[in-house]
Amino acid sequence: MNKTIVLFLIFLLLITSFSLTAQGGIKIWPGKINVEINEWYEEGEEIKALIYITNPYSYGVNVTSKIENPGPKVITKRYSPIPDISWVTIFPERFYLSPKTTRELEVSINISEDQQELNYNKRWETGVVISSNIPLGSASGMNFELEIAVKLYIITPDGEVEKSQYFYILLFFIFLSIIIYISSSFVKKKKEKLRTLYYFKNKK
Image 1 (tube, rainbow, N blue to C red):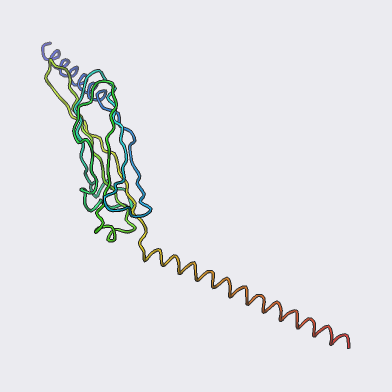
Image 2 (image 1 turned 90 degrees about the horizontal axis):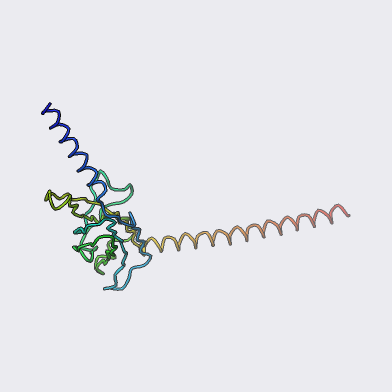
């Protein structure tokens, strides 16, 4: 009998803990960020994006954030990890989020000028990993930590070589169109001339 009661209490504790952990998570929006760099920006200029973090519950939580590249097994197809995670910074990295409040997390991307020419036409993926502690009550003195990753996708501009290739391809098609037009006009005029000669021959 005592063994059954002990097992029941353990089961009840596990269910309660799971429920509190599941319900205790902060809300984060958006779940992923896409940044497409059309042209390289001037040195010192940053590209910025915002993540909104909401604490919907009646207790405050401590929030921390960091940049972390995904592992090879979970990275998105056709993307690679960003070469230097220091190019992405977060502000603030640590803060206290009061009950039922929302706070912005600012993500900044700044690739140094000497690295820009080496990184044309790249598709990078990194992650903003956000953690928060989940207190289960002052009486128990227990804390859980939840971790959520916001995917950050970065696409860099096309290189100068690739742009010149597009220019030459376009120039080729224009030149080809002119040749086709001239050839068609020549063939058309020749046909008309032959028709005229044929007409005069038959008339005689």
